[in-house]
Length: 263
Image (cartoon, helix red, strand yellow):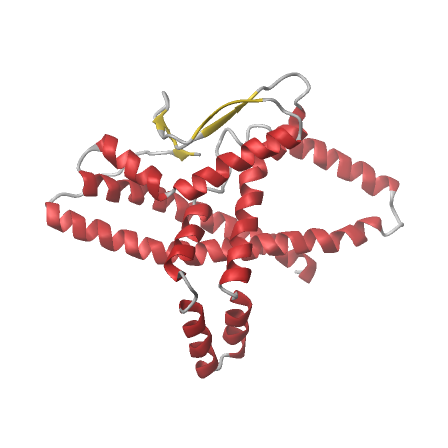
């Protein structure tokens, strides 16, 4: 496999893993909230409060993308509510889908939370935690260097607060089903445009010049997804332990059915 394809593959694999982990987290975080409160309506509130920073960024990015692309917005909510189809909606932004909206602008609005979430994760990882130092230590394989890097990583001011923000943002940035509504039409339009451009610029090297920046973009996506996965694995252990302890204390356990949560 050629090296230029590795960022695309890494991003795709990391995204699939992240989707699986987030489904588990949303389900069991809701279960822990239920065990903690003992009442379904209160459990929804606790569950929503835990993810509130991520939900706020999710809906704010929808609103900002709609505003910047000239799409008129309506109501905005950050309150959880049950949908008629059984899903739990943590928030929403209404925007008007007129005939001039088109798949491009609608897809951009739908993808805004993923773009914003990725940017925030990378900013926290690099500017706050300095993961470059930790990554370099892992590559060297030197135990003392790695230990020093880990100690510096954990000693970051407000370490737990920043870690929690990574968790909340990472678990609310993936587009919901409604966010992906226009993606098929947009991908078809983009695929057709790519074929036309490839035909018109054949032999000019234009596509080769574009391949580098696109690969870099997907590389950053892979890094952000990988960071989110690492944080999720840590919080999954905490959530599983809390669920076990609360279940033992109350003498009950949560039976999970089909539960879908959307931002």
